[in-house]
Image 1 (cartoon, rainbow, N blue to C red):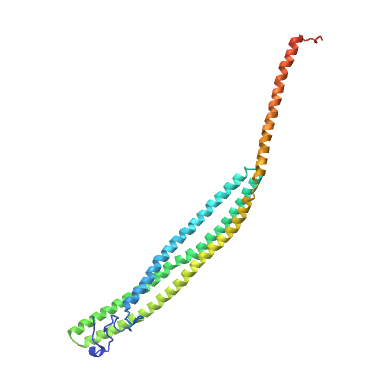
Image 2 (image 1 turned 180 degrees about the horizontal axis):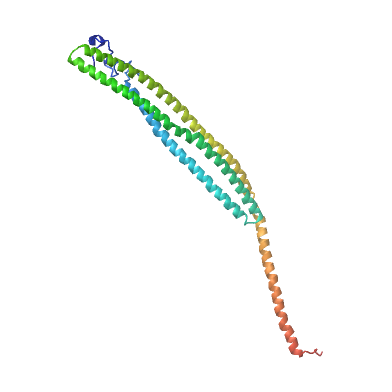
Length: 290
């Protein structure tokens, strides 16, 4: 729809002439000099908010699941620590000491993992959750603009219909309404621009900080875990297997020797009876004559 120039309309109302921008709104141009209509501006704003809502929601969901799984891993490792201590209590001194030390190191890693879980929840998941409210507020601003723009278009269409019928005083009244609606739309557009610009700036800063915190948390945990696991590796590697085997074999020999001693004692007692009995039989209770 192309309206006449300002002089032809006679009403002093800015018009649409070539550029599809709305009446009264200052023409906006892209880098190539082409007109950037208000609709295109709003589409960019809406896409910005929609993409933030989509991806921040997915980030929040996935990182919350990541944090929960990390907490479950901590719980499983705690169970492993208990089993290691139970196993250590059944073993020989060298293995008992090695397993207890390993269990202590593993428990220490889980303390670090607990700190990791708490920091992920505080510095990563919770900030992402807050974006739900911010996105809702920004969408409300966009909805407000759409309502104002709808009113502007309605007044513009009414003016066009009157122009096609006959110039009259009513046309002047409608032109005034159009101008007022156009100014409202321009003001609302400017406010919306500022709102979305602030939203975009904050979004970029926040996403940078959130993932910097995520990486820092993971680096700190893994650095401390590597330090503890290195100590655990050295302790396990230095385990003296031969000494435990000697102790085990000594215990086995001790058991067998004790068993052999009992067997020999029982055998001696049983052999003494027949010899004594034989002597009695052969002598008849008397001393033997040489």
